[in-house]
Structures are given as structure tokens and as C-alpha cells.
Amino acid sequence: MRKYDRNAVFNICIKALLFLAILSCAFCLMRLVIGCGMITSCAVSTAFAIAAVLLFSFLLRYTKFYYAYYFFVSLFLFRGKDGKVFCPCCNKHFSHFEDERFYDDKSCYDPATFTRFRQDVICDFCRSAPRHRIIAEWAEKNEGFLKESKILYFAPELSMMLWFRRHKIPVITADLFDHRADLKIDIMSMGLDNGSFDVIFCNHVLEHVSDHSVALSELHRVLREGGILIISFPIDSGSDHMRQETTSSAEERIRLYGQHDHLRLFGKDSRDMLEKAGFEVSTIDLADMPENIVPEEGPSDYDSNRIFVCIRK
Image (cartoon, rainbow, N blue to C red):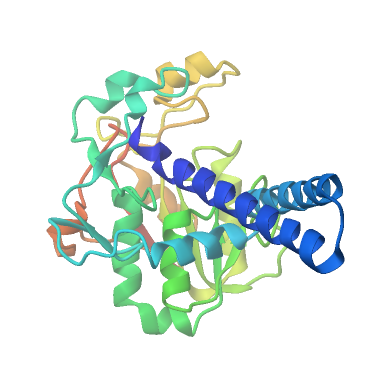
């Protein structure tokens, strides 16, 4: 079994326990309290148990219950405080991070892009990668500021949502396709008021949209003056400029950019691109990050894990 299936197996066990608990309670209620017959009690209790499991599955897949559920689970799993590595997203220590084996999925990734860097960089609970843990460490150092800010988070990841919940910091999530997001909006046309937010997080989104420059313009527009954009995206450290070719083929995108749903690969001029979009730009210094969160490049060639801190001029 691949490591990242562990949470899925845990969820199956929870659903099985939920089914048995509802089945038993409903059966006892029907038989002992209401006095129904054996067949009726079995049929009704089974129906209630199935309905409960279906409702649980729906909430987990389509609502923010997903984040609340994993936050609750995180209180009981991996509670040890010792270990060589630490995930600041879910606040857990491990003996080591895991190899997610992305390179095995050739329908989505180019295996060749996973040969240069270490692969054991994924949190065994919340699936955070180095970039998520770097952002979480930055957030830890700026917790007071974030608590006083109105925050928009594009394409929310479980790892960072666990961090915000643990620190009791409200955040508005946005995504065009994720049913769990508070706002179902297109990053290239948000429909939000100018200067609506103090902070925006946008982690590995620009490589997926049809026009990244329009998306940057929108991010700039909805930030207040002096507001902060925390942003990252895949960067080819061997290319001076962004690489982008028009193609509708997943195979071509894998060959060109290393991943089936990427539309471009940014270059070493990324900071200039952000400055031209109207931001004062700096980067989170990885040298300031604790070694136990493994703040380094990888697992893929394009995961430079360079996080830009962009202040709207």
C-alpha cells in the first residue's frame, strides 16, 4: 500500500465503525423501544446506517467539514513530540517524511523530473510538501499580523487549513472547482471589490490558469494598498524566462512542463514579472527555516520552493 493511502484506509475504518454504531443503535431502538419485528428492525436500521455513511461521505467530500474532521483526527493521530522531522502545518513530529512516489504516476508526471532531489519530503499526515511547511513557518512568525488581517486563500490545501484552524485564524477560501471553498471564483475574474483583502495566499496556481498575467492583475486589484501576496509557482532553475507553448495534449504538457495540468513553467526572471505586476517583492529566506521541516528543493525539478512575499505598491 502506498503511504498516501493511509488516511483513506483510516476513513474507511471510520465509516465502517459509523455504520455499525448506527446499525446497532437503530436496531435496539426499533426492537426494544418501539417494539418492531425482526425484519422491520433490520431493514430500518440498515437504511439509517447507510444514510449516515452517505451523509458522512458527502460532508467529507463537498463541505468544509473535511477540514474540521482532519483537524479533529489530528488531535489523536501521531501525537508524539519526538522525531527528526517536524511538520508545522499539522504540528506533528515524525522519524522521517515520506516518499509520495509521484514518479510512479506516468499519466500525470514526468518521472525524469524526480531524479535530482530527495523524495522523502511529504508529511505522513497532512501531505504537506516543503513549500507548505515554509509558508507555515512564515505564518508562525507573522501570526499576530495574520490574526488582524482579512485573508483570502486560493486553492486551499489541507495542510495550511489545519494550520489556520489550530491558530484560530479565520480565512476565506476560493477555488473555481473545489466544492469546499467559500468562494467559487475564477482567479482571472474574481468579481470582488478593489482592496478587499489584507493578505492573499496563492500557492502553485498560476501554472494552471490560461493567462497568468491577468491573474496577477486581479490579485493586485483585490489587495489593499500595502497588502501582502504570498505566492509560489513552479520554476525552471535552468531557464532565464518563462516557457509556454500552446498545446491541448496532456502528454505534451508532461513533456514540456513535467505535469499533465501545467500550462507553463516559470523562469529565473519570476521576480521581475511580479515587480512589473505592481508589487514590491522579496523572498522567504530558506536559510532562516529550521532544518527539521526540510526546507529544500524538491521533490520535482520545478519545485524550487521559492516563496515570494509581494507587497502591493
